Length: 192
Image 1: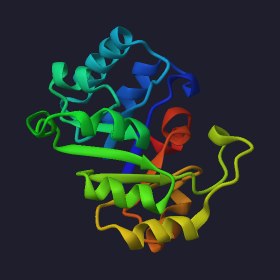
Image 2: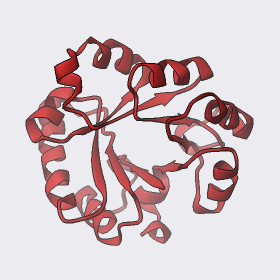
Image 3: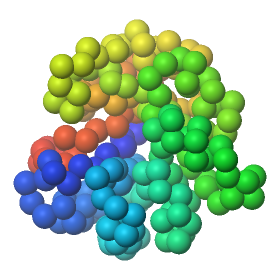
Image 4: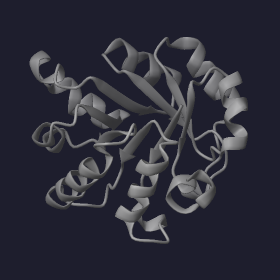
């Protein structure tokens, strides 16, 4: 399985045109709208447009951290960094949590992965696994880290960081059910 993670600054074409291509090609299973620099009103507007583009596609829209926008737009899939999962999602009432049918969380330690599974996460994004321009200068955690995460949880794990189609077999051999790709989906034509 593939998760497309957005970053409109990487696109060589208008961002929504790229989203239309991702929707049309249907190579990604999920599209995580991760535009962290936007204020809530701007994010809401962009999420609304992306939802409309993806409606007749098999690509599922996943909003990033914005619970209120997800609820207003009836998008029942959301992804959090670990700290925001702990702070915001876990403070929701059980009834509010029931709105979400898919809750993903980015993790960077085995302890975080176990915590997320114990507290209702649907899937994990573990990284960064390989060297990537998105994390320049930071040492990648590597395949052994990914394998350790996968061995300690039973929910799906997706690898992120330097993931390419050529590396899918390596991460799946380590136990991941798939990969999350940003640069490939945002700027490379071979992913479309």
